[in-house]
Image 1 (cartoon, rainbow, N blue to C red):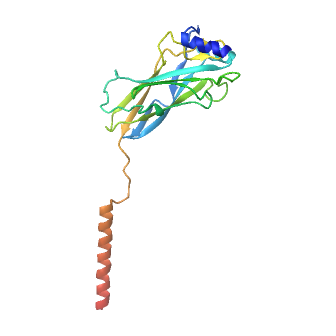
Image 2 (cartoon, rainbow, N blue to C red; image 1 turned 180 degrees about the horizontal axis):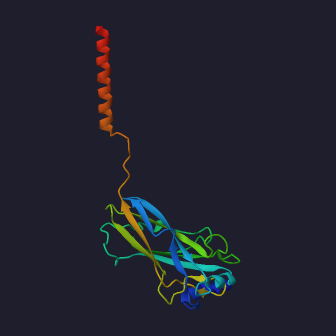
Image 3 (cartoon, one colour; image 1 turned 90 degrees about the vertical axis):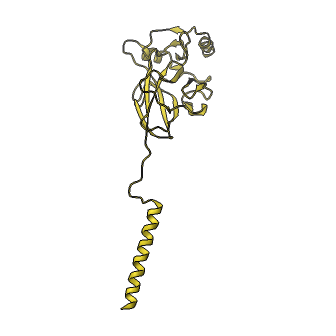
Length: 228
């Protein structure tokens, strides 16, 4: 019943608001990917008690009920790519369904704008808490698969941000429904690089030419031996 009420408050945007210092984060700030290839980038929610009691409040409230995030291409960054990396299809959004429910909310707008909300399973006695491991308070929301463009050297920047603007409440704790929606953004850049060129492997034409030359040299040696 409690989770049902929280779900209603999510829709109505009337959860208990608390000053949030939660942030989105990535494993690394920059990814380099060969032209036309894909890269799977995990996105996290990070809670701590620096300046707030986000982490302690989450633990006291039996974990997280839901977490929402949106990735949007930064079109204001300098040197905009002519062939940007992007989230090609809805299927390239891969929510964390190991710790959360198998029925997330996915909002796929375009290759440059996509979001997801993951929820705690309805029958769960509490939500994920992340009280152990490194770093503590870090929740995997899911992976976003990006397909790069074909122009080598171009960089595409995406920002992780709140999936829906205030006053929506989509990142909330399990029992009290305290809102922990991040107010800032977290950037990640994807740079297109040239495909690797194999070293020491001859091209087919050159390989055949070498075989023909070796055969000719062998035949000449055979003719000389017969004449002796």
